[in-house]
Length: 409
Image (cartoon, rainbow, N blue to C red; front, side, top):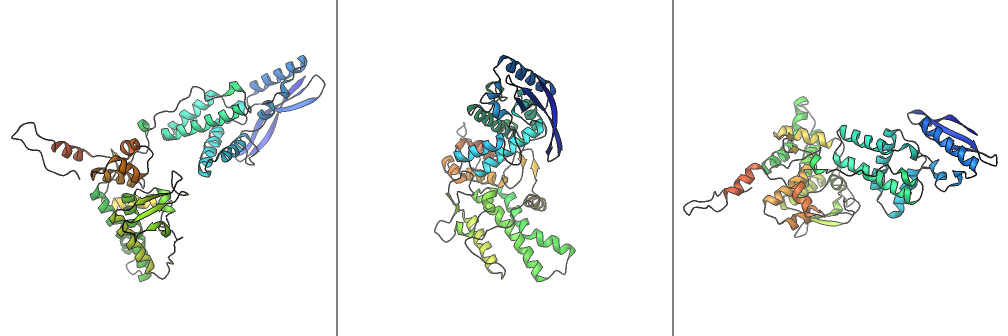
C-alpha cells in the first residue's frame, strides 16, 4: 500500500518538482522517501517497496538506502558533493583543486538535471561530455570533468553511498587532449618580442595624448609607469617563464637582484607544483626588474616593501591590453601556429632556450616541468625558417660543396 506525490523544492533558478514515494511496511508504519524526477522510475521504486513490505523484507533498512535519499548537491553542503569535498580536504587536496572539482560536479549535475544519485545515468554522463566539447571547450576540460565524476562515484561506491550497479562512468575513457587542443599558443620570435615590449612602453601615453594633448604632468607620469610596468611584465614572462598566478603574486621580497646570479623565488603557495623553487633570471629580465624598482622608488606614492606586489596590472583586463600592444607593435595575434596570450610568453621562454642550444634537462628545470616531454612537445616551437637553416648547416655530401653558414636564431 503506497502512493506517489510531488513536492516543490526551491532552487536558485526557481522551483524544482521531484517525485516522492510513501508506503507502509508489514507493521503498518509509514515511510516517506525521495524518488526520482522521472515518474516511471519513481513508480517502479514504489512497486519494489510495496513488494518488499508484503514479503517482510523491506529494503528501507538497507545500509545504502539511507544515503540515496540525500541530494547530490545543495548550497548548505548537506549533500553527497559536500561530503566528498570534506573527504578530499581530509586527504590533503589543495583548496584550489577542491574548488575545481566542486565546479565540475555541480555544473555537470545541473546540466543533467540530476537531483539524486539515481538520476545520473551513463547516457546522461555521455551526453553531458559530448555537449561540453560541442560548446567549444577544450578536450582537457572534458577529461577533467570525467575524472571528477569518476573519482566521485568511486568514493560513493567505496563508502556504499550509491548502488554498486549505478556507476555511470564505466567504459568512458579520456581523450587525447593534445590532439584536440582548443587554445593552441604560439611563441614569439625575438624580433616580435622586442617590438611588443617597445610598443607597450609608449602606447598608454601616446593613446591618451591623442585625445588630451594638454594632460598634466602627473597624468603623464602615471601613464609612463603603466606602460613601463607592462613592458617589464612581458620581459619577465618571456625570459623567466613565470605563470600568470606567479606573476600576480610576485612580491619584492621574492626577488634576489643583488646577488651575483639574480633569481626569483617562486613560493609554494603560488607555484603550480605547490613547492618552492628558485628560477634564475636572465640578464635582460634582471635589468628590467631593476629599472622597474628604480621607477617605483622615485615616485612619492609608492611605498616599497618586501610584501608589496611587483605588478599590479595582472587582472582581467591584461589580455585585452596585451592584444592592443600586439596590434600597435604589428605582431599577429592569431596565426596558423596558434594564438598569443600571456601564457604564450612562457612558450617563448622554452623556444628561446631551445634556439640558444640549452640542453633539454636544463630547459625542463628552468620551466619547472615534471616531464621533459612536456617541454619538448608543447612548449618548444620551431619555425620553418629555423628548420631550414638547421638543415642547411648539415655537412655536404660532395667534397666541393659547402654548408650554409646562416645562424639558427
